Length: 374
Image (tube, rainbow, N blue to C red; front, side, top):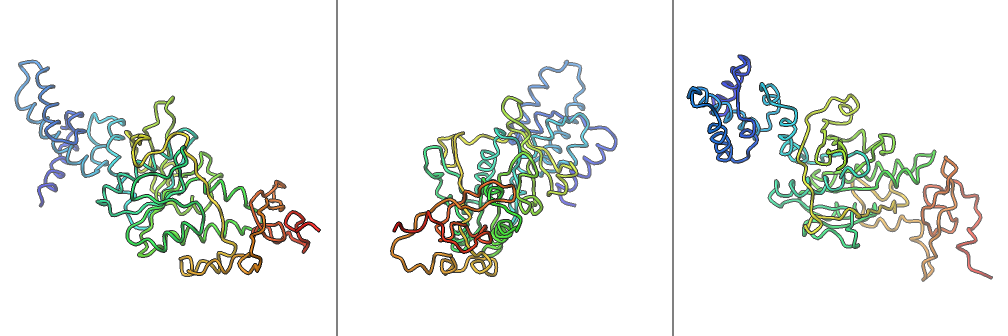
């Protein structure tokens, strides 16, 4: 049996016998020497009559539980007598970063406005980048409040379906895409025919089918489940629930679920405390006034996305690709109506005045906003 296996077995026996009495701060110290110092400090406060064997017992249990913490063995730690929920939560950070690592992993971060969802996404991304020794390319549609893109060399920017799919197609190696406001855009243009949702689903699956199947997704979602696009919910391998805001004292806390079904059952995987902020000055940072945009710019995804990737000549399938005019017609808001009766408001330059998703409402007349004056 390996040394670590022997320690785990020994600890198991002690747990069953109720013999665990460890210095909890020592367990949570990443540096064993720090844990030992904490033990020594505690030792100095004990009565002089305290038997030496009790101190040695605490040292052994502390070392064993520290190993369990570093290995992410939450089950063992959760069983430890006297180990509080708060302490268990503090062990989840490394586990969460490792949960993002598998190829094509799809992660949903959801929670109330102001709960730091974007900061959590960027913080986890920078730790995953370090975990993979810098061998990770990142794409996002998030910009800093000054209009600049995130400064880190590993991060690129795109805010359209085509731009993101081109990046996935043309970027080698391990990849991760962070997407914000995706559901907002899909919900704004969805209609009874389901064309927008179908196009978006094709886009998501194409992202995950990048070269080698290695593209990971971190999607920033809404507080209410019904506001999150269905494919972003049901396909999530990991769901991270941001627990609350600064005023609640929960800004650094999250509950993690092993997929959407477990989230719906409220059967959490583990909890995390200590999620860190990303300073605005950091190359990974954005301010609280960051913004994200997203545009559904593919007119015919069924033809433009083949075998899980954007085709090289995707532009030929755009509705205006065959225009022989030298000048591009003015773009106007779509005059179509959503099933709710609201205006579509998506921009289009098609002669009909209807975007691709509401073209079925066109009766053949030309939009007077796009025709030349007599």
